Image (cartoon, rainbow, N blue to C red):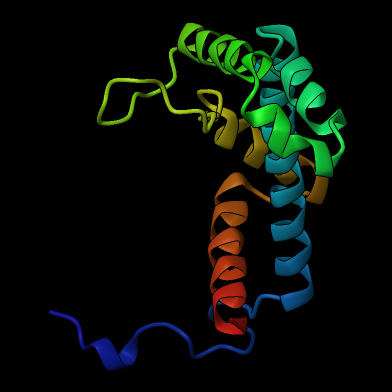
Length: 147
């Protein structure tokens, strides 16, 4: 049996090196930016390419605020609402307790996107994917401490 007091860490420079907080912040921000890009791409595909929901939203936002109350009680609103519900149902969005699809769009991350993002950031900074994962944990802990 070995004596644990006689092993490791005796030479100069031995042990884990401290991580530069600036690098952790840069890596964390890079990962976050790529995640936001992925999210906005998914959102754009969902709203513009797969449905015409964006047209419905633009139509509503084009109505002046003082006229919206009148619009809500019109037949045009009922038709508009029915069309939006049909589009959301066609997307296969999760239903509420009454069985009607929720109008809050659920955007999922593409399968494997986290791995590809970590790989891309690792290449950009010249570090390993495991380091990116560890730095991201430190980055999130840093942000949590700020709150």
